[in-house]
Image 1 (cartoon, one colour):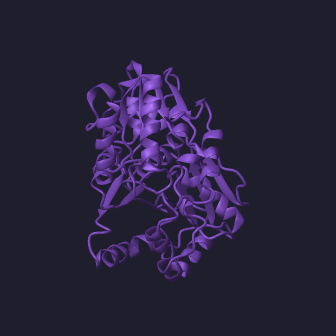
Image 2 (cartoon, one colour):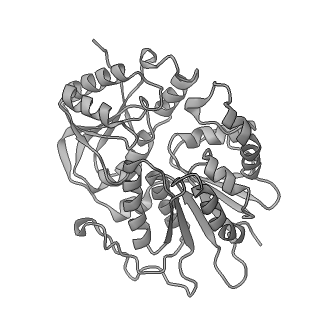
Image 3 (cartoon, rainbow, N blue to C red):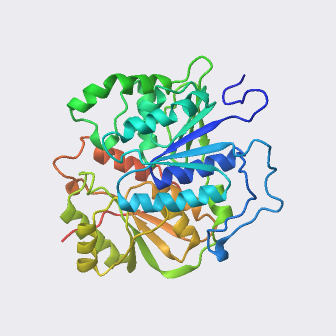
Amino acid sequence: MSPGAGHAGHPPRTLAFVESPVQLLNTLEWAHLHGLRGARPDVLPSVPAQVRRTVAGGPPQGPHGPDLTVVVLAPTDPMTRGQLRRMAELARDEGHRVRWEEARGGATAPFHTIGGLAGSLRRADRVVMGDPFSRYVQLLLTITRAKHLVVVDDGTATMEFVAQLARGERLVRWHRKGGRPGPRDLLFGPVASSARRRLTPGGRRAVEVFSSMPVADVPEGVTVTANDFVWTRARFGPPRITKGADMVGTSLVETGVVDGDRYLEAVRSLARAHGATRYFAHRRESTQKLHRLAAETGLEIVRPDLPLELIARRGPIGRTVLSFPSTVVHTLPLALSGTGVRVAVCDIDPAWLTAHASPRAHGFLSGVTGTARDVHRLATVALT
């Protein structure tokens, strides 16, 4: 049996694990590209009528129901949970099965979640994951026997995952790299090592990376499939374009990479220079920081209820979208292809970094910007 193929008599049993709205969005993009069928007609009743798209006839419905089951390992952050619930609605409207797990709902929740998923994991032919750095996902990988593993985009982390896999390194998020492993890292070490081995192709095991990010030094045996946001463009928009500029927020302050005061100054200078009026907050940005941004910059703070790619495609959106180095400088040009919207990115000045930032933070962020296609690069803003 070829990797990912189902046993005789049933389609491949595909199990996807997601922990963020973007991971679920990219799982839907992957399913669309690979022709995974839902159990219901191809309509989106929960999407506003002006942005619905119906494919004539819809995909043929097999007797086995959905090909894909999405397991949401729900986080505790309210903003992320809200976006995930909206994305789960879209996944169900596509006909996919969605299983919501309160994976972090108390001390015993992980045991109940893993125990409840063990049978499905052992039966799955394909496992899709949005975050190979997640300890939860790494633990689940020790249970599965699937011969086809798929990593869908979780933003810029995908670039680092592929590079670490190629170098045979332990899987560590880029903004934590350079620090010493803590006690929990050491305790979890054997599980992380097992996950890395499983994510390394070999024998009959196939590994696919589905990404809109540029990935270099791809390990032998890993298949990289381009995510061009075909599903997003088919289902949403085209958007109404406004004359002004919009700004995209980042969680670099929250992750300890960029100093909060410097970030606020940079946002204020960039908004003034380009006439930005709205600030689309990242789901991880703190309420305190956003209140301060609104008070000191005059920007309207928007907390999206869906990933920005869908919000922008639905519109209205500014003719120029301003961003610091982040995933959206790669994804928005694809989602907004053909609309005339310009995505502009401002580099991070090394002076903005905190003393606790990873030694390779600036190089990584510069690489995120430098490898982006179809974006306009702005000079680093001068801070007063």
